[in-house]
Image 1: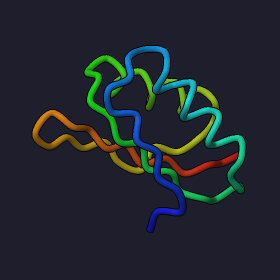
Image 2: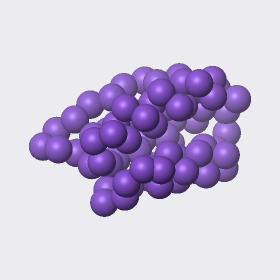
Image 3: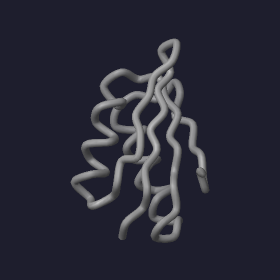
Amino acid sequence: MTDEVIEVTGLTCPAPLVETRKKLNKMQVGDVLEIIGDHGPSKKEVPEAMEELGHTILSVTEKNGVWYVKIKKMN
């Protein structure tokens, strides 16, 4: 289950990370955020940064050059 979705397709670093952090700040602990993007380096950077901030990465998938990251807000 996903509580919120943000699309960062077409954005390059650091915009996907910035938008993810802004969205998570507005969410409740335990909520799940799905991020959809297509900038290759952000597929790695966003999950790593969110883990460092204490959130749980539920999944990282890619299909046809578009990636999907699901994060559970933990704090």
